[in-house]
Amino acid sequence: MYKYQNVVIDEDTWDGIDVFKPIGLPGTIVVTERFRDFAELHGFTNLKLVPSTEYECPY
Figure 1: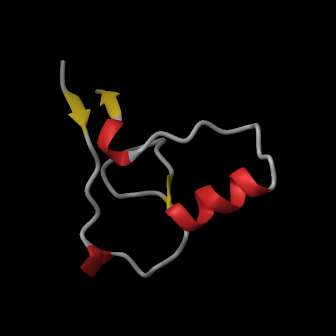
Figure 2: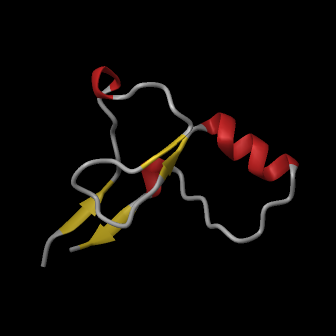
């Protein structure tokens, strides 16, 4: 079984958008710290935010 650990985004492939789906990680949505701060400020409860250094995905 394969397992992804950690997520690193090549900044040359990112256009600066705050919410996006990285290529090669189906079903995964990545957000910026700016979006995380916005979600926390406004009390979003229907999502689970995981720091990229703690991300794991079994495939």
